Length: 97
Image (tube, one colour):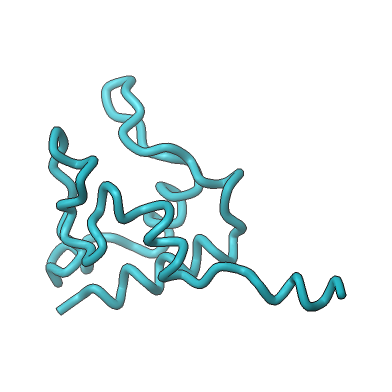
């Protein structure tokens, strides 16, 4: 029975929708409902994609983002496994046009 429950891990798309889409948008364009006050990168832009390394995305997702002493994005290292965070990187890469 334990093996069956282990098979219910969320997919990258499910994690994106649950953890990221409210700010970054379902489509990755950075126009989610919670992003009205901050300008987020458009992950569909090839130039944005080229400027972001996988390591940068992993670190920002795991540790969060703080600018000028203000938390801009919470850390997800306690909510998502390393594998799930890497899955989000792959999901973000799919937004590139």
